[in-house]
Length: 208
Image 1 (cartoon, rainbow, N blue to C red):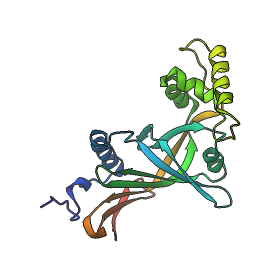
Image 2: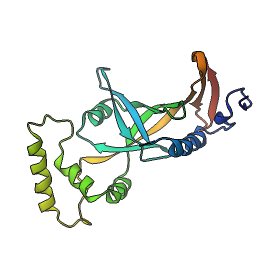
Image 3: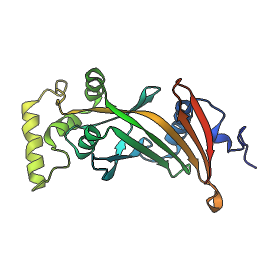
Image 4: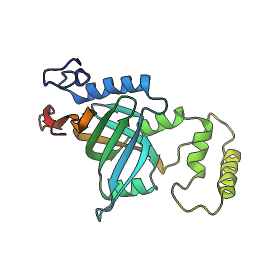
């Protein structure tokens, strides 16, 4: 019989008042069991007309201040976020049969943080950020390869590739964080944390 916490949920939910701590613990579990990219998550956005779109991104950092990912600021997702700075993240770990949904408001990371992360990337990734007009129509792969060659010639020093002004990061400040665990017969276990004005979190169970 599975162990339970104080709310009669599986012990994997633990008994924590801070969802960031629980997220960190679940992420550590996922790193041990997921074969590829345990930090991959679906980012849902909507434009000013409310038309939604979703895509996969990689979570690069998280803390009490929010959840961070990086991208081209001319991309559709960034254009959506500039018009409507609200978003939702969904991360699903098939190996653990767990899921987390994070909803909140979005803002840009500081240039200092963007520079720090950009400088940690590989040379090829840095060149790619210059060469790719992300999500724009591409006539031929040859055009992309030519652009890569162009920027490699422009920035031959692998330790000195500047960050494009249009490439940076977004940080999502969570208002809600829901933790989900698969249970047979679709009687799933769900726990949601709601952000309160005093900075604390309120916990509630959800029906499956």
